[in-house]
Image (tube, rainbow, N blue to C red; front, top):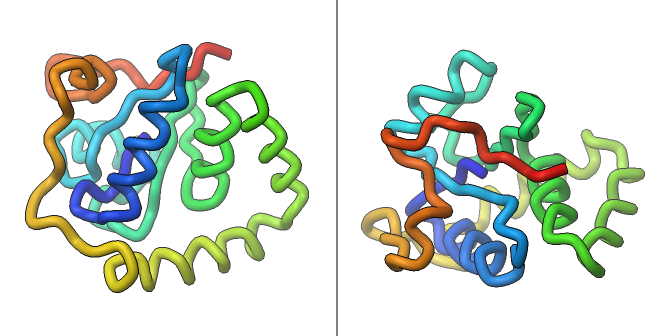
Length: 139
């Protein structure tokens, strides 16, 4: 999952996913980092668009905005898979809601001065220049 590393909401979301992803299916990289700068453009992603969350699936599909969020949530397994029902909401409608949240997120959740540093235990879950594989979801 590629996320805005200075966004309070995005950082809280990543922390939530780290806590609840018991099978460690998700990996993370900030949009501001070199991994996003290298991996996203060839796939049509725009790392400079900090209003967009991306998920690169293990089969190479790049999901963005509402579909990326739903994919990440359902990847947690268990009861979280029930959120998959929200895929029936047409993407333009879901992305409209996503866009509204993206526009107000700094005002509501704050903006960090820099990307948050993962703890040593979380470090393996973050991609950097030495880890070039996609954020694989073991499905």
